[in-house]
Length: 595
Image (tube, rainbow, N blue to C red; front, side, top):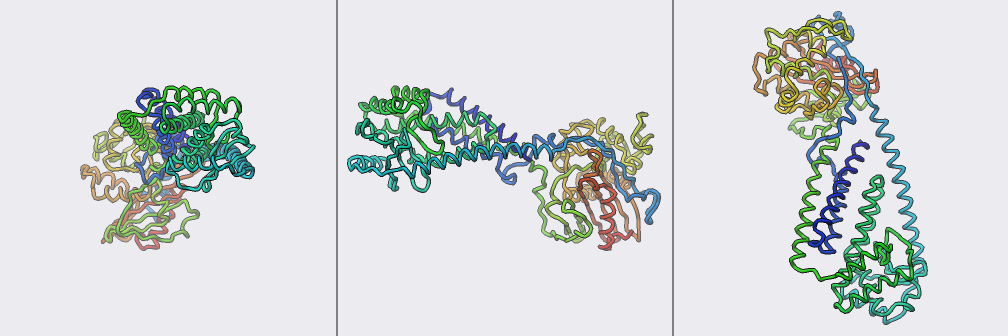
């Protein structure tokens, strides 16, 4: 999660910054100073995109391969020892096989990524706190301006900009350049002894400039920029963009002041700014405040802009708005990109039913990473243990073979009458896999190579088409033809497993009826007291540990049909066999199937 979020933020922020710089370069003459600055607000919006909750945007995940890996899962469906007839079962019980795979420890990677990010965020948070403390020290050093003429000039400037808020005008020997700061209480601070080297016109220009910062909400924007710099500290383009944004903000304020002056005062305003270069060649910088002075490079660009100033025409204003909207449209198009990169496709969000009953079956399970879903077809009701986990998408492992077999039948790779596939002679990890297989033996023994060969003959495009047709989980085959369903990219939730089994049972896919019957017959496991049990298990064995166990299926009774899915997850003991044991115990206690 941390890796994906960081990568999402890095990509979206970098794309947005590059696009804004490109727009500014192409449309430099069409964009007014104010709208060049306003473009950066679109960046602030883009920086929020990776954190938009998944339920508000379409689901998807471009980086599932980070958490994918691959499994040659063998899994199946039966209690240990069932193949030999223990526990009153017959020889049609499926056998439990799983083959371990090597997979990157994503939890470790996420932990390392989170640790690095938190460390950097703490460092920059500390620097921001230091900047805030500096402002507090400046605030304590403030003395109020006593000169009535300057106070009157300040009030006149406020009235000119239609500002009614009480803003403190002060002087401090701790500042070398005028600055404005303060969210709740706003301060405009001038350097000590400013009246000795500034004319009344200079002071008026300064006050108009600083008050324009307040008018255009630049003070809270400072805090937003600091916040995002803490979040995105790892992206150097953010630092470059915010540096440019602060310069554009000063230029926009310069233009706002010039617009309120007559052309005779343009040169005087430029000279006012130049005065501060002479008095303070290396001004103190505080990112939580707006200040008149800046670096020599920044001042040079501002002076050039002032010297070439022209009032904005109506046409330029219209063009600026159009360019801004165009850029905004581009930013909005990145929301689906964030969705594709998010992990929200790993949750089934469309589950909605009139009758859903939550049950406490915790006595059957040993942790909170397990779930059980039962659908009563006659009553049209769901009974669910751990509803949150029941909508979490997990690798289907060998439970997917139900549909792989069905696709093979539909594509005529195998037929109900001739489903034999010859063994290629390559030694397999289990003796039962070494030999020719038909549909019944392949499902019974959970033979990986049998279903992988079906997929190869069908082709990935056709497999994808079928997955889309039946709405199988996240429908993601990007893990590759041989492994997408084996602890890789294809994922499905327990609720979806049950919904699909119900659709399979009723042939809602409109497949050939004989193909449905062929797969159904191959899934039959046991029969007791006029009740027939059908099922398939799956075991995800990663790095030598059984981390994911499935048992899905349905029970036909004389009067009803029940569909179920059990999923258990653990660090080591989560096999299909264990899931089967749990399921049978629940079904027995519910008097649905008494083994």
